[in-house]
Amino acid sequence: MTPLRLSNRQARRLWLDLHGLLCAPTGPLDITRQVEELGFVQIDSIRNVERAHDHIMWSRSRSYRPGGLEKALRARGVFEHFTHDASLIPMRFLPMWARQFRRRSEQIVTAGWWQGMPGAERRAEMRARIAREGPLSTRDFESDAPRPGQMWHRPPHKLALDYMWYAGELATSHRENFVKHYDLAERVFPAELRSERLSDAAQVDWLCRAALARLGVANAGEIMRFWEACSLEEVKDWLARNEAELVPCVVETEQGARRGWALPEIEARLAALRPPGNAMRLLSPFDPAIRDRKRTTQLFDFDYRIEIFVPAAKRRWGYYVYPVLQGDRLVGRVELEADRKAGRLGLKKLWPEAGVTWSPARQELLEAELARFARFAGLAFER
View 1 (cartoon, rainbow, N blue to C red):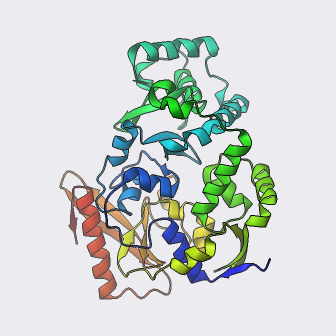
View 2: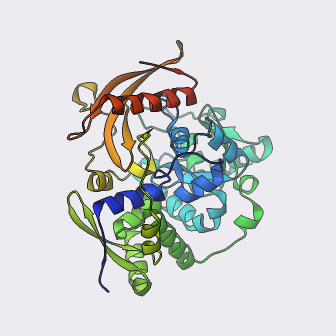
């Protein structure tokens, strides 16, 4: 079959459309539907202006308010587990996640830094306590072992809780000030979803199709990295078995042509694309549209890295820098300063992209977006 060729502009617009960023962020708010369309939303503890997961949702619906995802978690519209990182996943995807619980628990057993985890008897005691007392956080347990000062060190009781969480024995009931509270999985996951049994092959098929639907055009590695719930070998095997129904594609990027696969509806999706508006949108560093930094560079010629763990003297940009989207281009990046005591949000620094003329009109569009973002965070934008 002759590959379908996508221009760079087509590919950018398709990518933004699949991520809910091509059309205006208006219309009725449906949090669960939005998470389903994205596949998942990564959550993060850092609150530079607002938490990343809330920012991701607001970028797609200006009706969204901070804490909306937490309400969806408590209402069991979504559940929390691990994709490439801690994420909120639509609850109805649970039957397709059963193998991921098993995969993660098996990976932990072979990971050296989990060797201090308490054994099965101690874990059973902790689980029994949660059964008696209800949802508990790591702060409700104590470990006698010394606690080294490494940044990512977890005390033994935390290792045990997380192991049971990864394995699907425990689940996130809710979070308070971002502190996770663990409960029995059977009290969080609906019985009808827990009882639905799918073979590994059926789960892999769903995971690959669902990833490709949200990626538009992708190769095996990109499909694998979307959920990080299949191995590369499983994805390659799936592609080989379904090659006859998939559409081979060639995408023009800033670094040259890139080959991949798409689902049969790709041409209809491309035909339905409409030109984007001119308004600006501020993206979270954790936004799924820019999570794959290599793809961001290829499609947008935008070299982006988050530098929160980079020493200040070695940063190229800044601690927490937001990409700026205008239409179907990433036109710049900004560093913001939130003064919650004074109730103000300030623009600390702006970096227009090379080749982008930063006119007064563009500055006005940026300030309008910053004013909207400030209101979302309960602040006032200060020029």
